[in-house]
Image (cartoon, rainbow, N blue to C red; front, top):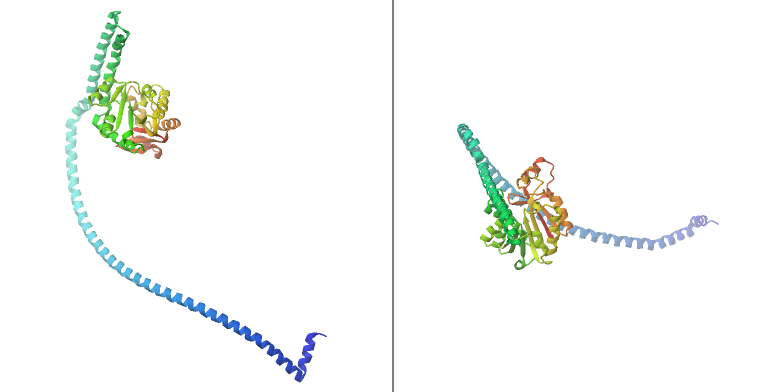
Length: 405
C-alpha cells in the first residue's frame, strides 16, 4: 500500500490523527529550535562585522574631516597668494607700460641716430672705396709675394753655390762631407716651410691656447700622473709640448725640420730630430702613456705608413694609454674643396669615419672623432649632415682619439 495513502487514512481518524500530528510537530520543534539558534549566531556575527565596519568608517570620517580642514587652510593660503600675485601682476603691468614707453622713445632716438650714421658711413665708404680696394685688401698679399720672391732668390743663389761646390770638390772630401753639403738643400726648404707655418698656421700663443682643450684627456687617464710619458710626433714650433711641460708632464717631441727644432731648443723643450715612425719602431712594448700628432698624418705620402703608425703606436702604449691625432676635417666642405690644398706638403684628405675604422682595427677602443670649433668638441657622429649648412659650419679640424684598454 502506498505510504502517502496510509498517512492520509491515519490523519482522518479523530484521535489517532490528532496524536500523530502532535507527535510529528513535537519532533519538528527541535529542528526549528536548532535552526533558530544557528540564525541567531549568524546575526550576532553580522552585527560584530557591522560594528567593526562602523568603527572604520568613523575613523575614515575623522581623517577626512582633518584633511578637509587642511585643504581649507591651503585654499585660504592659496587665495592669499593669488591676491598677492594679482597685485604683483598689476604692478608689473604698470612697470611694463612704463618700460615700453621708454623703449619706444629710445627706439625713435636710435632710428634717428642710425639713419645719421648710415649717411655718414655712406659718405666715408665713398671716400675710402678706391683706396681700400687697392691698398688695404692687398697688403697681406703683397707681403707674401715679397717673402716668396725673397726666399726663391735665396734658394736659387744657394743652388748655384751647391752645384759649383759639387763640381770643384777634391777627392779628399769624405762621403759625410758630401752628405752635409747635399743636406744644405733640404735645410733651405726647411727654413722656407717654417716661414710658411708662421704665416698660415697662426700665432704661436693662439695655437697654444687652442690646444688646452686636449689637456683633460691626459689628466683623466687612469694612469699615475708621475708615470705618464708622452711622445709628440711632428712637434713643429712646440706649442703642445710647452703646454704639457707647463702642466707638469714628461713629454718628448720629434720632428724632421731642423729649424723647427732649433726654435723648440730656444724654449728649452725636449725635442729631437728624426723620422717619427722609425723612432717609434725602436721603442719597447708598453713604454709610453700618450702619443700625439697634430696635423701630421695628412702629410704621409703613403697611406700604409699611417696604418703602420697606428699599429706601432698601439704596440708601444701602456694599458690605459691614449693616442690623439688632429687633422683637417674633410666633412667641412670648405676644407675638403679648398683650404686643405693651401699647404703644398699635404698628401691626401683623411675622412674621419675612415680613420676611426682603421684606428679601431689596429686594436684601439672607445675611439672618437671630434670636430673642433671655438675651442669646443662636437661628436661628428651626432651631426646628421642633412643640410648644406652642416657641411659649412662644422669645425675645420677634427681629433681622432683612441684608447689601449
